[in-house]
Amino acid sequence: MRFKGMTKLLATVTAITCAAVTIPAGQVHAEEAVRSVYTNEVIPASQAANRPIAIMMPTDKTAQPSYGISNAKVLYEIMEEGNISRQMAIIDDWQGLSKIGNIRSCRAYYIPEATEWDPILIHFGGVVYMKGRIDAPDITNLSGTYEYGVGGSAPGAGYFFRASDRKAPHNAYISASGITSACTKLGYPMTVRQGYYNPQHFKFFAGVNTLGQYANAATANQIDLAGVFEYTKSSLTYNAAEGVYYKYLHGSPQVDGNNGQQLKFANVIVQNTNWATLDKKGYLAFQNLDNTSDGYYFTKGKAIHIYWQKLSEYSPTQYFDDYGNQIEMNEGRTYIAIAQKGKNVAFN
Image (cartoon, rainbow, N blue to C red):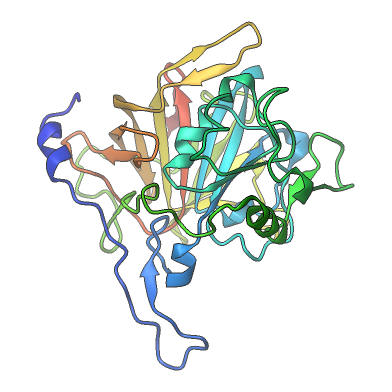
């Protein structure tokens, strides 16, 4: 690790636990509540026990808007072949959604990002480089067609549906009831699995973290990812009144087709990652497991340089400042751009 004290830190760092809180008296259907591992917001304990979905969604201009994406507590964006990115939405409160998608194919490097949340992975096929992993016994996935390239099975394919709002391949969706029925048929657990699920993810700040403790924190009211995602020109703009970043895609607000809401995030992470091109088709590989790569953390209109580590598929990715301290994030949703090293984010 490049920053001092890391060896000692790895042995001593303790992650935030989901502390129980009390719902005010008189609230209907009051039950014990906990802090969300995704956002640190107060949620019912029953919701915390449910497995999230990790669902593949496109960034293609003609495929917008996506449905259900504003429910994502963590949203990943990663480049794929053809110089276009794709998204994976981690959604824990999916149970009431009647239309989720549209849904696109997966890539091998999304799987390690997904598994750290122990989700039900939902995709519409994939590529041959997923073979041996997407069909492994520990993976619970639903796929609208063959799991990888032209091979594998299609678990739960009968529960996807096509809509008339767009032409294929941008019109494949699934519903919460379809997910539940497919998982029941396939015998997939619907609550987080012991031995796989790890609640020790983000470390959250007690209060509001303005990054004022960092003398070198830079101004970051505008985050420009056009150098990372050249096709979508993804960007985020800080709204000081709300204390969150609003997400833009193709120069326009990125919104949810279900409710028209623009995506907004309390925390933004750019995670510089080693990568390689695998073949003439341009399929990519990313080094998801690493402990030497860097990036940036953005919150409250400020930015600091960070390092990140992920030591195994089911272990969480953790983020550290230049002094070896795990960064303390603000309550709310998080957007993570997995950036190819050599392609840089701009901010001011």
